[in-house]
Length: 318
Image 1: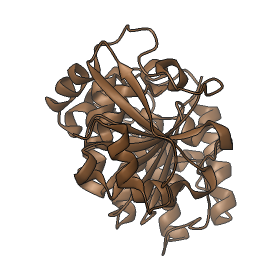
Image 2: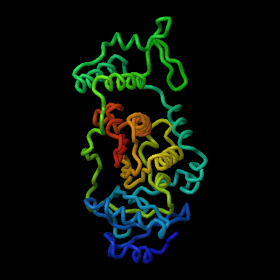
Image 3: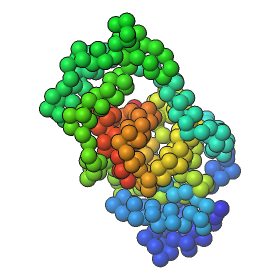
Image 4: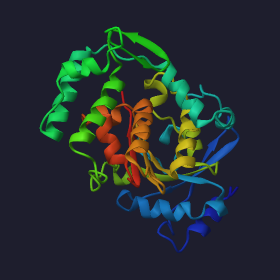
C-alpha cells in the first residue's frame, strides 16, 4: 500500500488531481494513515474516477468526504470525523468482523432488529392509495385489500419476517400488493425518473478525496461514520460494511462519496428487472429509510427508479 504523500502526488500528476497538495492524517489507535487531496465538487465524478483508476497502484480506496468544520492548513482526524472519540473498535477490527458476515446474513440481522412503527395502518393505507390514484387514475377499494389479506377463516393476517401479525397485514406487504395492482393497471415498461439527479454537492472549500488504507470501498464505513449506525435499529458498522460489500458483488456498486448522512455510488450492474429493483429498494429503505421518507416516495416508486439506474443516493439523518 502506498504510504508516501509525495509518491501519491507523483501518481496523480497529469490527471485532473495533478498539482494539488497531498496531506496526511495519522490514525494513532489503528496505526494507519489517510492521505487527502482537495476536490472540486462540480468535477467530483471525473476526479474520483481518475483516483479509482489508480487503485492497483495505491492500494487505497478513494472516497469523497466533506469537512465537519473549517479545513485547517493540515487536516486532522476531527476534520472529517475520523475516529473523533476513539470509542469504536479500530477500523481493522471492524473490517475483520464484517468479513465474517455475508450480505444476506447482515441484511437479515438488521431486518430482525427492526419493528414496524406505530403509525396507524389506516393512515398509511390512505397515503398509499392517494399515491396509487396519482399514478393510475384509480385505486383499489380498501375492502378488496382486506379480502386479499384474509385467512381462510376470515381473520386478516400476514406472515412477515417469520412472525404472524394478527388482524392486519404488515405495511410492506401492502406496498407489495399495491405494486402488483398498479403493474396490472399501468405497467412499468422502462426505468422511471432517469434524469432525476439526487446527488449532493458540498461547498467548494469543504470537499476532499480521502485515500483510505483499504482497497475495498465497503470498508470506508470502518473509517467514516454513517449516521445509520446510530439512527437505524440493527445497523451496526459491521453489518453495513457487509451490506455494501454485497451490493458491490451483486450490482457493481462502488462508493464515491460519504457525506456523513449521505452515501453516493456509481453502479456498473444495476438491477435489470423491476422485481430485482424492488428487492434492492427494500434493502435501501431498511438501512437508510430517510432516502424515501424525506422526499415522500413510496418503496415501489423507488424500485421503479432503481431499475437500471447507474447512480445511487442513500440518505439517513437525525
